[in-house]
Length: 491
Picture (tube, rainbow, N blue to C red):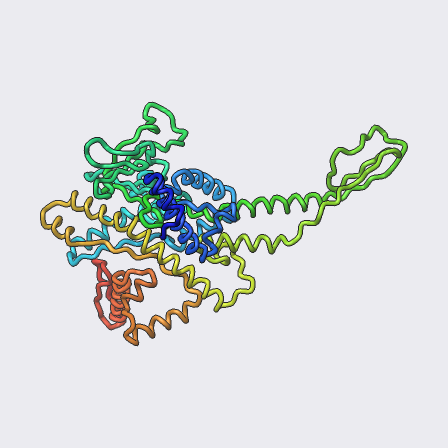
């Protein structure tokens, strides 16, 4: 920037004032240049022109910190009272979790495989796995994922090792002691909303209430306002990451709460309109009132006498029209905001053919796969599998079993996607296998089934056919299945 004559005069009279003036001129020039660049993007000025925009520079947790609790409570309310919100939650749970994401033990040890089938799997499939004794493992998965959708996050807590096949608890985010903030003594650890991290940013513990802070339970064992430190190895924190560095989740209903409330209010207005339209009434004028006072309100089928000097006038409110169009627009906005299809949300298949329905399912299917493989499996299923193996090894007898378990792993198979045309899609899978573009085991897994279990069932069916065929031979003695008895069929 070139000095002007005035700059030189001021600098000669007062060097300090001259330097200050020069610095201010340079700062103003830099701001003008930056403004010229920014104004190439007209959208950068929307925050000034629109009151609905909030342009803030905080990270994901700073932006959500004050709103997270209110969004969670509002979402729970609309889910309780709004069938559309309840349906949206159900659609997501059914597609992501279904009857459950199935665990499968991967090991070459036949003894472990047998113990898995005979002991561990029956426990996981029963309500004994639930700390409350209500749900099997698949139900706990659906409960946790539903809480993560409604509240933005959920906690899965496992007990200390020692009890054979310990019980799992699914907790709402309310259990986090958000009063716990800041440094933790001289350890170098820090707390944010009850989540403790070490100096490297790794989660080492969660500070959880003993009871839900909003529970009506009272008594000598009430610990609602007391929290305890739970090792992070026993806790899985399930939430969707919307921004890098995000440490807690936000309700998935946040973008659609306005539309859900607008739908409910519009339904109430439409219902009131229908009630008013149903109020067909008759008035006649007479000198003999017979003790009947003039009406104070209308009612359907009302017949009311009024005096000769009384006048009755009616309001003529504007007609409420476009109900279907208004409703469909908001329902589509809700479906888009939740990442599901309008048809899945409403069950309205008007004007849908196979091609359009399949295209809609493809987009929704991609969302479901992302929620499964980026959220449910790494955030809930794999930590559960690790805990199952560690608990199994803790209770195993003998070094050989512990060593075998250290080499084993648990894989998880999501539920099969719904097929719009099973015949066509099965043919496509067969063609992919025959062309060498996919393996049979891979296609079976993509269908939501365990290849090993399918092969075992096929082998069992084939063995049974051979046994039944052998029974038809004269004088044949054949052992059927696993039965110890033999049957002889004489010709």
